[in-house]
Length: 145
Image (cartoon, rainbow, N blue to C red; front, side, top):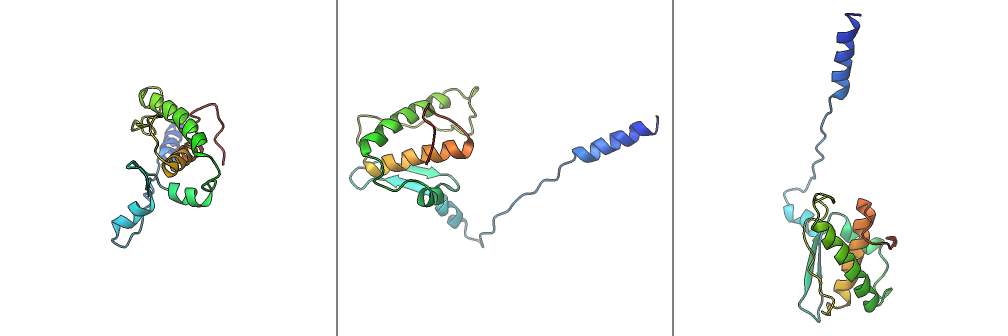
């Protein structure tokens, strides 16, 4: 019995050790390439508003998975964005309840301002992407593509 306990402790210590695998990105000395691919600048030609989203994978998802431009009307997008922004900002104000790493910044979205179709389209699709990627549900609407 005295020999079994130290062996069990040794097995538990070995099993609890974790090796850390730091996946490194090979960028051949070009740091801006990674940032450019993961950055989506949302701006409208007819307005002066701009949103910058730095989210790995969002740009590829927007091009390859999201519904095409023109699928939703601007009014529909504005209505959904108003609800989603409100839910986002409520979570941003409650870091003890919701993960503060997910809801880092407050979104300033005024429903009386016309941001244009492109801004509303990309903002809405970011919310869909965010909910699917991080398994979050901002409103009662099921996020779907």
